[in-house]
Structure formats: C-alpha cells, structure tokens
Amino acid sequence: MAGRVPSPRPWRRTAAHAAVCTLTLLLAACASPPPRTVKGPDEPLPPLRERVVFSALSQVGTPYRYGGRTPEQGFDCSGLVWHSHRQAGLNPPRTTTAQSRAAHRIPTTALRPGDLLFFRTGGGGVNHVGIYIGEGRFVHAPSSGRRVSTQRLDHPYWRPRLLHAGHLYGDTDPPGGRRP
Image 1 (spheres, rainbow, N blue to C red):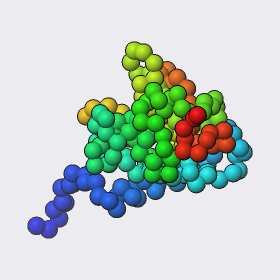
Image 2: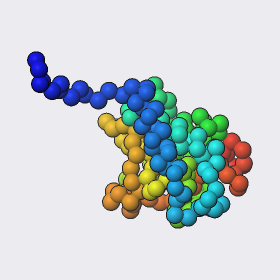
Image 3: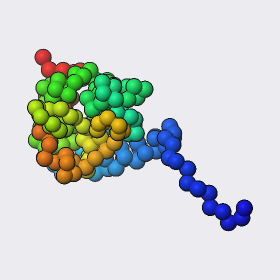
C-alpha cells in the first residue's frame, strides 16, 4: 500500500542500542567537570572512576530485583554499586549500610563521577544508594517493578532524602575499597 506509514514498533533493548546509549550518557557525564572537584577542574576522570561509571550506565534498563547483583538476576541499589565496583576491579561491601559505613565521606559540593550518594527513602537510616555520573545526575536501581535508570539529584523526591556522599576508592582509601 503506497503512502502507508509503518506503525512504531515497541522499543526493544538490543546490545548495540544499549552500548550507544551508555556511551552517550558516559560522554555527557564526563564531558565537563562537576562544579567543584577535589583534585582540580581540568584533570581528566581517573580510569577507576570511569570504569565504575561506565559499568553502572551499561546496566540502564536492567530490571530491579531485591537482592540482585548481576545483569542476569537484575539489581537492587546496592547490588548495582557492588557489581559496578567489582567490574572496575574493587571488592566493595554488598549492602547499602555496609557501603555507607565503608565509604570515605565527601561534601556534596565536591562530587565527582563515580562517587556514591546515600539516601533515606523510608524510616531508619541509609536505605538507598546511587552512583553519581556528573552534571547533577546519578544512576540507580530504584525499586520493584522499575529498571536501572538515571535521575537528577535536584529532583524534588531525591533532594531532601540525600544523607551524605562518599566513595570506596581514592587517595585515602586502601586498595580493594575496604577500610581496616
């Protein structure tokens, strides 16, 4: 039938599409330095941080699964952090609480891609974690029924729930991301 416009197909996640999206997000996150940095605004992102960010962004679209820590299983928030750091060669703690305790705390004004953001989304203490990717955005595994995604740190839901930031590597952390 001439002139017929094909109907749009449902979006399908392919490896090529995921790779293009991931690289686009990574380049956007790393293209300009955050407002303030610890080492200096003109210094490139260290390879370790780059690998953590790239690994986390490559999981965008993966389903949430409580206790999940692999792309095949799906991820919960701390499982995404665990997996991304393991892919970069680190040995992080597995749970949000343990990650929060092990993290070297930094002021949120000094965020760099690869830093962790710890939130309180319910009662009690820290119960959610995400990975800062730059330009005021982070990647996380939000909750049941949703998928790994990026979000703005200044979003009205997330801004008041941010407790602190930190990282599991750097000049003051021992190799492997664990504190003695």
